[in-house]
Image (spheres, rainbow, N blue to C red):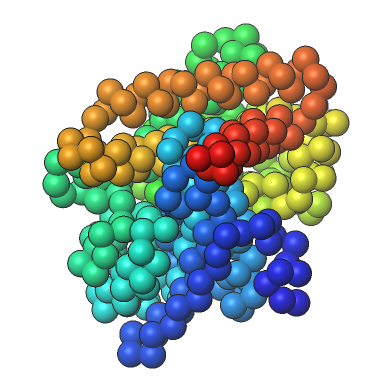
Length: 359
């Protein structure tokens, strides 16, 4: 199968492969759209089983970033990068310097930030070789780790769902099954527990899992058992496609609200959730807080100003309003939430494309 035959290829503007023999860097950068501005999206380091699997992931993720940035009303397009390798054993400063040089070669078409397997510190190393890195912790424009803001957006979205389904303003008496408590999941767990939720959680990192469970009172289950937990809400916060033909019949929840990207293995799964009466919170809508935080850094850099938390809060509040509007349209039009969200994103992207053509 060639790139253009891939089911995940969606009129991407560019897909770039990079290899560095000295450091072992194997990376792919996918630029989906620059209609609304430079493509922005995180860098994921994962031990993919094959380069084909890495390509599929980066294609899906980059399209998701275009939609995420459009729904959040940011002046950024969508892109993503993946580094093939084990983040626990194969990270070196030289590897991320080589990655920085790869990003630099694209000339500003794509801005990188942290994602699964990559830290703010790793991005700071890449920044030594390129200006096109965001999510840094030093300097007046630095936005730092976007994970807490991502978690805040998912938490507010969860409250919106709870108000709609259970007619209450907190999570007292509700059980949330959290899959993954790494970058975002841990912050989310703290917020949900403080709001009264009973938590059941899993993660492949046993040490981190025990730490988060001890402070939140969560019950721990094996990774595959999370789908069978009697719960009200499923919160996928690890890798994507955990909502699939295999797991669908195992879930007993009334809602899905989580931080993971590309949660639906296929669009048909979204339709199935809708038909079963399960409220699915479109992932790229509710997890948009992190990219809003990153966008504030790009904005500050472009205008020569400093990071502005008030701007971030205003954008995040508007994003939650958009989420509520998507839920309203889904109910009134009897349309799955993911289809409504896609229509919103695509409308904004097409409008930007039309403006560029007319200019």
